[in-house]
Structure formats: C-alpha cells, structure tokens
Image 1 (cartoon, chains in turn green, purple):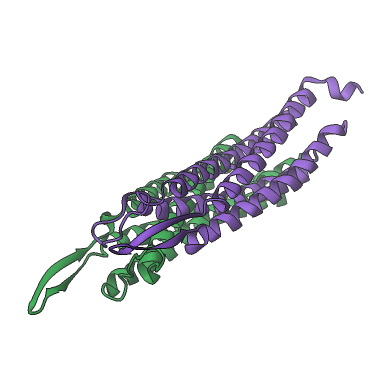
Image 2 (tube, chains in turn purple, brown; image 1 turned 30 degrees about the vertical axis):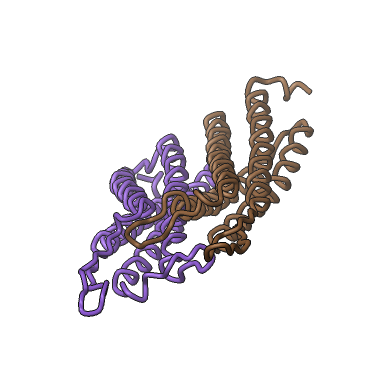
Length: 185
Length: 185
C-alpha cells in the first residue's frame, strides 16, 4: 500500500477525483439542458382576424438547429455516464487510471467538445434571432409572444455552455495530469 | 547528430512535420472562410410597389452570428500563424519541440476548437434559416433572392468546418505524439 501514499500518486488521485466531479457536472448540465429544451413547448392564442384567434404551438423541434442541439447533448450526457463510471472505477483501484485509458478519454473529450460547442453555437444563433429578430431580413422576433418558451431556451443554452466549458476543463485537466506523468519519469 | 537518427526521434519529427502542415491548412481554410464571408455583399433591386424597386443590400454584418464567426476565424488564423511559425522553428532545431511547449499548444488548440466549432454552429444555424426559412415562425427564406450571397456563405461555413476538423486533428496528433513520449520513457 506504500505506493498510494507517495506525493505523485496522491496528485494523480486528486486529479482523478476532480475528473469524476467534472464528469458528474457535465452529466447534470447536459441533462438539465435537454429537459429545459424538450419541455419548452408553449401554446398561445394568436389573433388572425378581429374576434378570431387560433392556438399556435412553439416547440423546439420546429427548427433543425434545436433538434441537433438535443441530439448532441444526449450524446454528451450518455458519454459522461460511461466515462464517469469508468473514472470512478479507476478511483477505487489502488493503481489509479491507466495512461492508455486516459489518452482515449482526452481524445473523445476533445471530439465531444467540438460537437457540444457547435450545438451551443447553433442554438444560440437561432435563439438570438427569436429574441431580437432581424430587421434586414424581416425575421420577426417571437420572444415577445412566447415568453416562457424563450426563457426555457435561454436557460437551456446557458447550461449547454457550461457543458462545453466543463468538457474543455476535462481536456485541460487530463493534459495537466499527463504532463505531470511525463515530467515525473 | 546520432540522436536525430533514432527511430523515436524520427517518429517525433514526422509528427512535427504533420503538425506544421495541419497549421498551414488551418490558416488557409480560416483565411478563405473569412474572405468568402466578408466579400459576400450582394445588392438586389427589391420591388416595393408596381413600377418601383429599391436597391437592398445583403451583408454578413447584418447578423451578430456572422460577426462572431468572422471574429472567431480571425483569431484562429492569427493563432495558426504564431503556432505554425513556432512549430516550424522547432522543426529546424535538432532537439525538436519541447514537451512543455507542446502541452501549451494542445491546451490552446482545444480552446480554439471550442471557439471555432461554436462559430461554425452559429453561422450554420442562421444560414440554414436563410436557405430554407421557417414556416412556424414565418421567417422567410432569402437565398432565392440573394443567390450569390448564399453561395458565399455556404462555402465559408464549409471552410470553417474544415478548420474545426483540422483543430481536432491537431489535438489528436499532439496527444498521439505525447502518448509515444510517455510509452518510450
């Protein structure tokens, strides 16, 4: 058991604890973002003629950008479960995480970072039009009508932004741990 | 000079050559994407009444998503110049690139990957509305009117997608080279 108590092993262990915590955070934020997006449906009576109003829905799946958003974050949350469990299992072993597994983690973390960041960007770009409209192309804003819908969207995009930042931090953390491994040898 | 001819040093050297090539590709694609986006301006006569038409511009800076897109790709192309030169200088030195510098490269590569992927997503999401419109929110498509404008946009987004993929490949390449360094020691 002496090998666990060396300062290097202790450092690598701290890194692994932070790794698991970040993956739990990734799972939580991605899941909250999905739930907020999927439950954003709002129905409003839209006046079409004097004395006549028809109910109209606003739903996330009216725009392909948001469908991609939900798909990307579902992949991210599924991924965070798998890697989180693997990291937690490695934490229980006295040898810690193997360097090879860690490299595979960073590679997929970087891929997921690209996917989630693109989803956040796409949803943010479209949601901004919904919020402010665009006078040049005469795209009307919809957030004045569908208030709660837009509030759901804004929160969801904020959470997915936190997911992206978490993924970036995961990449940086793994790099830091690996750099310590190289320096140590 | 014997140290250069060992198989390990040779491998690390090949990695560095690919690294420089990828950074040149990143610079080229980011620059082409910016140029295509900035030169996309198109003016059309839009009929407002029978016998009366007014000229109307379509420009990239009418939407904040595209302003962010140009800013992000400008940063990426500037970054690719700096890191490309540093990599090329390391290639000339017999010792190759230092592990510390390489770690800093991967960290910034990952950050840039997030920024460029988000920009591609944002531009893609908004451009898709321009192409197809959105019947639910009554956002009309504009690509039937501004054809060359949209062609510039589509090409620009394609090039920025290549930039994102190049950044991901750069991260993966550095990780591969670093993993070889760990395995070797």
